[in-house]
Length: 112
Length: 114
Image 1 (tube, chains in turn cyan, red):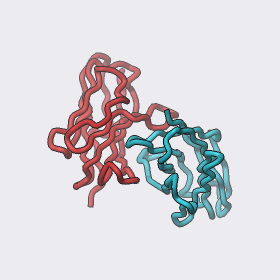
Image 2 (cartoon, rainbow over the protein chains, first blue to last red):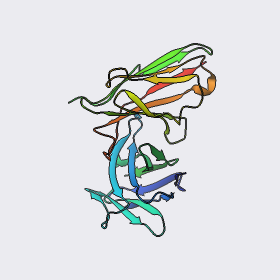
Image 3 (tube, chains in turn red, purple):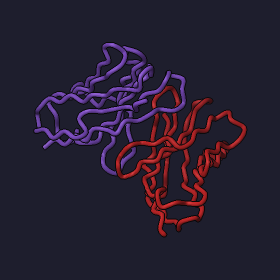
């Protein structure tokens, strides 16, 4: 069975600072994908970044980067230069066969 | 182009009633997923369609839940004899194909069972 663990229920960061959101995973599948989604108060899940288990380099998408450490089974999200609009819930997820398995999320609050 | 749409956005019903939740995926997307998100939790998988067929329904909690996608596009999630524990946000997602990485999510339907 696949499992995602997010141990930070809430994180605070000041505008323009960088923040790291933690995610560890467990799976016996040799091939898998790791995702981060953002869920603002409106409720919609917004895809941020994807990392494949065989990708050699860490994924980056604009201000988002994924710190993938396969041996430690971690896939932390790094947001650089935080903005007020980054305040939201952030979910780490894993895709094995087809479905996504989500963690419990981290609520990020960006202060001015 | 339009994203994934879900109707209704909110549904309030009484315990024991039957409800239908609709999902309209992105045009051309063959894979469609239903998830349920309870308060304070991450989304939990319910069922996955590839085309018209349910390829994986292992997440459906019991036989009160059923979903269809008769023409390979719009999907309907059906819940019989609703219970208060069914209250949650029901999210639909679609992807271009089963092998595609990104699932595009709709805004969800908030179901409240009184």
